[in-house]
Amino acid sequence: MALTLDDVAREGELRLLAKRPDPGAYRYEADVHIDAASLEQGVVTMRTCHRQLDPTHRIVVAFNPQRVRRIDIASVEGVGRAWVEGRRVELADVQRGAQVCIDLVSQALEPDGPDRWRLHAGPLMRRYLDGYLPMEATLHVRWPPGLLQVTGTSPAPQPGVELSVRPDGGTLHIIFAGRLSATWGLQRPTQRH
Image (tube, rainbow, N blue to C red; front, side):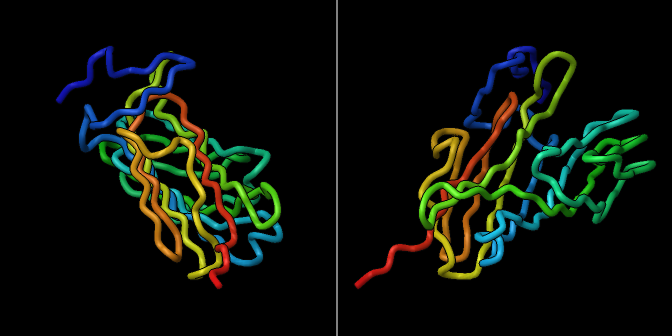
């Protein structure tokens, strides 16, 4: 299925999509690990994977310079050359369907009150000229069972946003066009008497 101009979000616009207009195109996956030390220091480890990349001469994957502490390229397929430059990963001679996975250490967790935290992801986007193409993002967050519980997410569950939670984490799946910053509300589990 070909995209139309109606599928492209304009600058400043964020559209949540109940269904992907271009199945099989670019998608983003993140796997974030939180432990007891993360709650003290705000630092998490994560692997982000950019899959089904569009063919192009060059792609820049930029990370928040205030948060990211370390960047390592874990794996790459279908890319002529990949390297870390400052707080970015640069890809050259990208073939259709290429992918790159990147390991990060990030200051993405911040206190949000007693025994409460906010986890930040993004901004996520699939830039095209002066707009944004649709994309899919799957954010997995994991912790030792019983360490935390999810109090909410932004965006909240709705058409285009699915949330599933477990005792050892959760998954947020979002289909959108635009520039998206997602957050998780987390807290220590309430004790049952």
